[in-house]
Image (cartoon, rainbow over all chains, first blue to last red; front, side, top):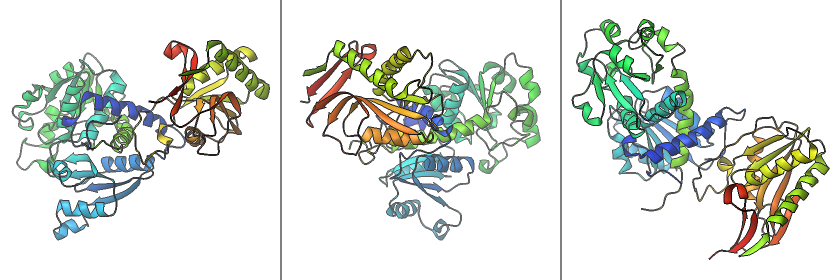
Length: 309
Length: 177
């Protein structure tokens, strides 16, 4: 048993069995993480390189903990302070790291598609930890896993993804993942932050966030990614918060208690208010906790020996 | 294919094993039975049931242990999907009886001991096996309780069938093709 893919580049390439297998394995790792000894020796012969060309706290820490708790050796690399600034190419950088006998690469890059490019040039398995505005597969897996933990099987459930859909790799991976698991997805936000033709991915579009929240069982609230917005797409953050931010008052006006998620980092008072982020309905910290188990599962399943195709 | 134990023989063997356990552990107050996933738990379910009957205890400490993450065949890297580990008690200071259906190379038991020790420090660990394929050990591991000893060669396999899972109680020796 192992996954149908050699790398975890995107959710797009996974099938439902892969996702179920990852969830099933994550269940077991979650048990391990609740023990006094939170570590297993499974991957003691493997070295993983975390290569981050873009900033990250949660994802990088989560991957590093996952690797260490599997017993793997870990090396970390970040673009700032490296030879990348001296003009070294991506393939050269990675090949140099692999020459030091590294078995698996976890990479984040600001260019969409970078992990696919790399997969054509190296033999080691690659886990995409976020590429540009394209995919962030482990985040989508841990989101779906956390949803399932909270509300059960996702088949037919209503999930709203709210906020900066245009610049969010979390949104795209979430859409692929939730579709595969049979959930119904609505994306909501200001028209300037929702890509044209997104309906072709099989999602509904809603511009009124009250309606979008009324419709859903779970709302995944995304961060406004100012660093990727090169021209003004809404007037001010205050205005955004006023019309598209999620606050307690709005949640209380709904007919049912919906589950609130956020992949972090949170801009408190912009896309989500503190009284929502810290409320009982929020599972934001469960997402972080599940992240380690999901990443352990992914790395474990990818470490398997594969038949030569 | 050769039958090693038929239904009646298997039943008598299980009774004997359970009585041997009670003989050594008496009240089972400080003893836990732990079955090794996946096939060992079918045996340990039976043994735990019989021990309860014999001692008259309504409750004994009984758990299951999955060893997937502790295997030593890392070079071959066959990926196994793990089963449940369920130990709703502490093994600290307890006498633990590990239970598996067939003892062959001893590698499973080595993994099981590593897995077990991550949960605490038992006072003592014993091993119960239904079938001991003797002279085929690759590690210095010997069982404390043996149901049936059998001499086998590399190409043979011992399969234990359980009524609950396979529809019949029987232990057979087969020659692999």
